[in-house]
Image 1 (cartoon, helix red, strand yellow):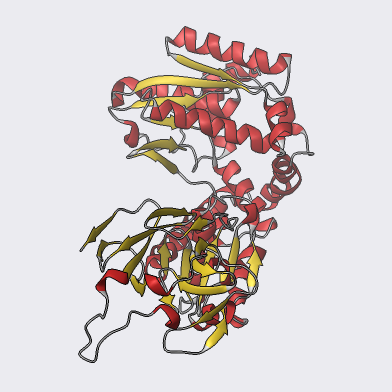
Image 2: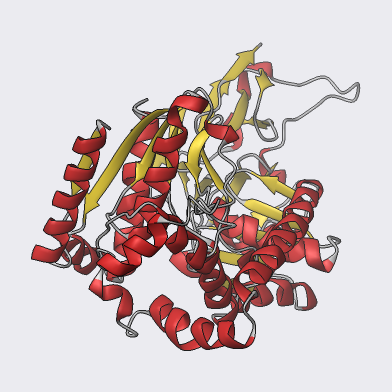
Length: 473
């Protein structure tokens, strides 16, 4: 877009009157660093580009730009890229160019075009930083964009996290990342900045299409609101910064109530505001970044008032379960299938590795309970296998039970009961490896406690895949 001749003449006299089109943007973070401007050719990104170019020498900024052609708007989009190339060429600023067929990607991944475009831009920005081509990618998000983001997240049912709006800085590697230096600036301030400089830019026609959710918010909600409340963008920005600070503080308290590992555990005694953030943190731990809503968080919290074993479905196939007084969040796995004749050696049992050895050995390292048993008391048809329906177990000290009931007594969660390899013959289980042996294969001892026949003693050591273990005799 080019300003009319009369408007350009008018603004040409403003610097004489002492007005320079000031935008409140703190650029001190960029001093003596490499900065790449995300330059689409639109007014906001052009303003950011000009601002950084004007301050590059003073702050010793090594400036570049990055342009992404999304393959969405045909000739108009290509013209935008041509405009950016001309702008950077005239300013002597290096330009990184990327292109993609975003509509095809969106269809392939089953997501919206806007979401696919955002994901691709993020990938490009991360790539530039990780490939050490720049220290920061600066995007031109402003107070109006932040206001739209706050309203969008609140309307779709977000919590205080959503009210925090757009983050000023997104870390990628160390102190390098994506920065939004214009977040405190209004659209009006940006337009004044451009006008004073007589700058040209490209207008994306899709920005006027109310079919896009953010455009609807911009034109149908925020525009009328600004007529009644001229400072609404800045006020929403101030509110979002306060909300972000409060939210970050509450998140800092979650460390005391969570345990991360193969599964994510949340203590039930977490205060309600902290508990909700523990739930969000658990979903993010499994890669769920944007697809959750407050309904998912409420469903997780509600489990604490239900019976043990109650579950809730979460996005991406993740589940939450009340696990003996705490919440466990996990991604279900298919039970491993294996079947080995009983023998000395090491056996792959899915989640675990089982090591069977003759003699009374000791395990030094990370492992579950070490079991000792009398090999001579096992039937010849004994095998190593997962659990199955109808298994029975005579627990150590007497009393035969269904294996399921024994595992319930041992407080082994239902989702984990198939993980433990068994030493069994038919439906009779002689050892739940890592947990207990059957009374039938206990090692006979003399009255003084010594073992009657050392040669029949076998050791079963169970350890998690990927963990080293040392066996000593």
